[in-house]
Length: 312
Image (cartoon, rainbow, N blue to C red; front, side, top):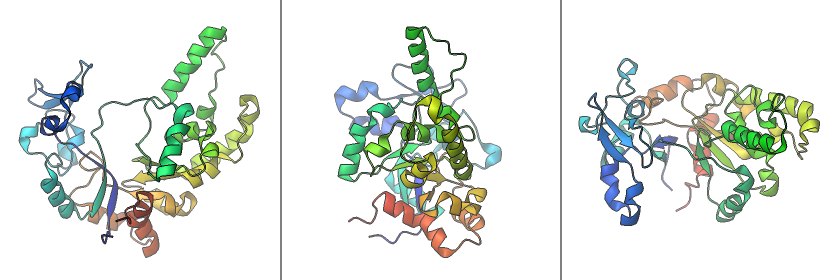
């Protein structure tokens, strides 16, 4: 196994579609995004079936400095940090002092996940011992649940005036907790006990209050909702979820309430949350005073364990 010291569990591939389109099978190339030029000289992605271009902007923030961040007007022709080939990427990682990365694709759209249908995929993931990740959240979330409730109300003639979705009631203090509650209340973890989820870029300081609030509201709302869980919501959070963060000084202070083994650091490179090429400096500042064991778990060991980096 490689001797890792710093692992980012949330970095991004932001390579121009023109660079990787030739590797897509010909019958699927019509589904790949096109790069178009905007009036301000910047580039944008035009997604198939969508007339609204997605401009290059905050997704290319690495090394710019806060005062130079832009939401548009950026071009691949500028030689962007984070947009190059593998050799460039390795040089950028070395400059930032990062030994390994978990890579997410460019973010341009979401798909709703049906948590009720999830167990089929969950069984396969557990059987194959494959780690499951999500970037921040699933597509849809509360909107998808609310739309389903509206359809039900239209069919039954019920009023939505007192509609109180149980997942919203259990997620009052933290929007990031909503999708966790969707998974918990769907019973997926009771049916697939070995299932684990990692949510990148959620930050972590909110988790202790979220767990307390979810437990309190579960005891209050479980009867009218018909929700009968074998465990309190916080039990599922502590035993089935891991969370990613970039800078969360308060979260590090309350790490014992979160679970040190459930926290993973990341850069978000080259997106707006990254501090490239100063990640080591930022780490040393916010991890100052932490025991070496906790530091190693959050910066390295948890990622090695979750993503099976100790194999091969």
